[in-house]
Length: 89
Image 1 (cartoon, one colour):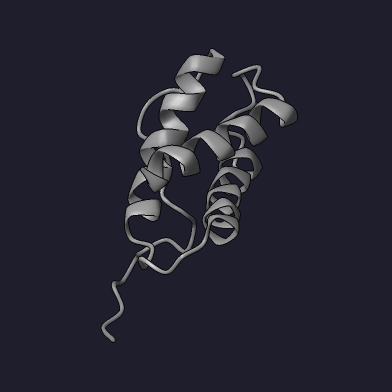
Image 2 (cartoon, one colour):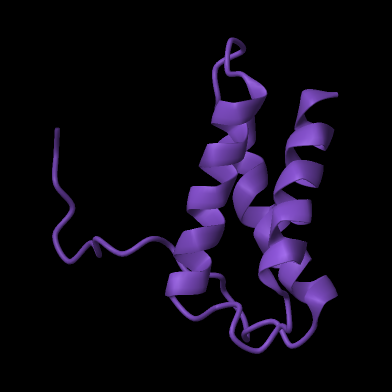
């Protein structure tokens, strides 16, 4: 496998300012989670899909991208479930 010089090991960052509202944070998260969900194999169950979405969101939180959004932990879990529900349709 060819290595790209100067490539960062960090996950890709959302291009744009940090979300300043819950709604803009959900849009940013949807953008990042949609591709990951679409790439999952058809046999992926709901629990595995939720875990994948949680990992992506955890990465965004750890990177500080949700700091100014006002999105709480309970609301994030609702977002996880909503994303997976839409993906399953």
